[in-house]
Image (cartoon, one colour):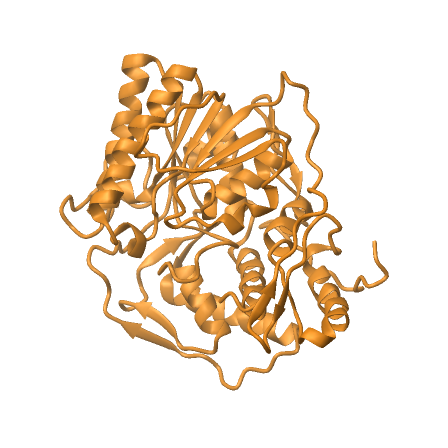
Length: 433
């Protein structure tokens, strides 16, 4: 450790007020527990770029190392440090000198895991966890919405492989588990090419299920709360069939995922494929694309840039938000459990969109005060017309996850937002937003 370390760290508390030092757990014969600092060093520190005029790099390097250590609990010796020169708008990349430490597993315990869409927001966090746990991970991604930068810190590691591939085309590999996450998930992206979206949902799932059948791998598909549409039942249990517009602008995604679930259970009944279905509710966290139109990233980026925060509709529609680490915990628990029915994975804490906007504004102001930044004015909340088929209520009934998986969210919305604000703030400093 360096003498540069600050005296005041930012501590993360869970919903019960206890400090979060690890994420994951040892359950169903699978150990998924890793230190939170090890994960943070990958999504906060690895993309953190020193910003300095060309002739003052070393001086600025030391100052920013201290500030960043407040949140990651110390500088990390394993990661690269790129340098952004704002005066010339140039960036100097470095390579890793050493990879982060991963568990050394016996061959009998080490699994070969395929993650489709592994360079996306959710996929990259899942990959980080599986890599730190010592497994062999292959990432399949066509980079339509994913980015190489989310997993670049693993490229070259003997346990890791990154393949540019579209799941609409068949893919052959030997594996023990398949996490099938490949599909654009935000409205601007899945509506960009609606036919391609439904092809990805159906043909991509068909190809991966065929691979699971051949290799006898366990298969988990990331489905979505969108299968419930604009629900008439609140909160939504897994046995609710949904209320979906089959020809609306969101149908390519909603009905695509419903068809993918149908296909998944078809392979289970007909061919005996070992399947898992995770119905994921609204999730947020570092590495979310700031321009993908999702409410959390929209609010945070607008507030940090001093712009008014845009609420669509009257702000009375409700959402429930879960932090990315809780989702990864739930997915790994589901994959390794014996639960083959669909399982909701989400946070049952419900906010109106207006309440959420006010909370984000409050946390952004708190972070700015702590960092000595004085905004020129307080951002306002402005209202615009609501998009077509935007659901009025969305909250999961997570009884099945609690009973079958022993899983429930640990991260409070407030703590997750603060970490995400710091992530976006660092990205703005380095010039990438």
